[in-house]
Structure formats: C-alpha cells, structure tokens
Image (cartoon, rainbow, N blue to C red; front, side, top):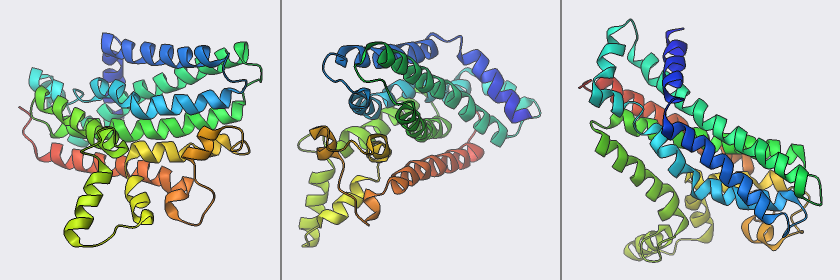
Length: 282
C-alpha cells in the first residue's frame, strides 16, 4: 500500500505541473491535427494511423523525457527524497511508485490522444474508423510508452544531478531513435555495422542486420504495429515498403517486437533500481 501511496502522491503533485499538462495537451492536439489534416487525403483512417505511428516513434520519447528524467533526480537535488525516505518507505516502494505515477501520466496522454483521434476520424473520414484497429494501435503504443518511461526513470534514478539526468535522457533518445533509424548519414547503425564488418573481415548478412535493427524499442514499436493493418497491406505503398512479407524469422514476428520493448522495460527498471539502491540520497 505504501507503493500505491507514493505513486498517488507523486501523480497528484505531477498533474499540477505545467510540463505534465503540456505533455498531455500538446500530444493530444498534435494527434488530432494529424487526423484533421489528412482526412482530405485518405479515405481510410488506418492510413493516418500509420503516420501517427511515425510521430509516436520519432517524437513521443521527447515528450516523455521531461516527464520522467527528473522524477527521482529532481527529488534528490531539492532534498525532497530525504523526507520521503524518512517515512516508513523502502527504496523499492519509492522507485516503483515514481515509475507508476509517471507511467500513468504518459499512458493518459496516449489514451486521450487516440480517443480524440478516433472522434475526429468518425466525424471527418469517408470510411468509418475501425475501433478494433484503434484499440490495437493504442495497446501497442502503451507498450512503447512503458519502455521509454522505464528507460528515463532508470536514468533519473542513476543520475546524481539534474544535468546528468537530462543529458542521459537525451543520449538515450539519440541512440535508440536518431542513431538506430539512421537520421545522420555518417554516424548511424548501418555505418557502425559496416565498420565492424570491415575490421573483422566479414560480411554482415541482411538477416543479422535485421535482428540488430529491431533491438531498439523505437524500431520494435513500428514493427509491432503491423497487426493494425491486417488485411489492407495492398492498399497503400507505405505499408508494403515498411512491413515485410510473412516469414518464419523472429525479426518479422510481432510478438518478438513486443518482447523487445518489454525486455527494455524490465532491464531498465532492474538496472535503475539496483543503482538507486546503492546510491547516496544526496
């Protein structure tokens, strides 16, 4: 019950924050704008869901970072943590209470954004949206949210200052999104694999590259949205370009992509908690 109390108190304090309100409000507004801007381009809302998935994958972690990276580091720097830990609370209860409170805010943003998107789709698109497709999309997006909130809270628990927590969160975003997707032409996952192959004198197969590529929660998220477009892959070229034909390989399986995201969540929380358990409280 003390874990629930910590989570509830932190959520109550967080919901008064302008940052929290901005995360929920701006995310919801942008999702609504994506649907509103594309109703004259596509007849089917599921095509717009594909564009929303790109937005969630590339941009949403930047919304989650300020929400989570100060969750513990901020308390440590202003001394609040000493008061909380002076009460009969264990470090595990404090750590996981913080995680649950920040996750609840992030989940609220996802659910509210998708509900507003569904309403806009019902009101404007030629073809009525599929509630089932929206539900699957929302569920997968929540798993993705869990993975990045876990990473950022773990960084907050391990960091000894606000600046280190901030740079750690930005570094995680750079590695898992910018680097993994290859936004920089010189320094990206592909160039690193090419360099490793050259140094070892071997050729890294496309199959191996695919396994490495899906090991980021961001790339795993996009792969895990494939069931949203079941039965309509031939409708748009974007689906055909981004989703591979059915195969027996793990990196093409939706369940494996979901497992990657959950694994990042579990590992991050374990490492973050162990670091927090050994750290000085300031």
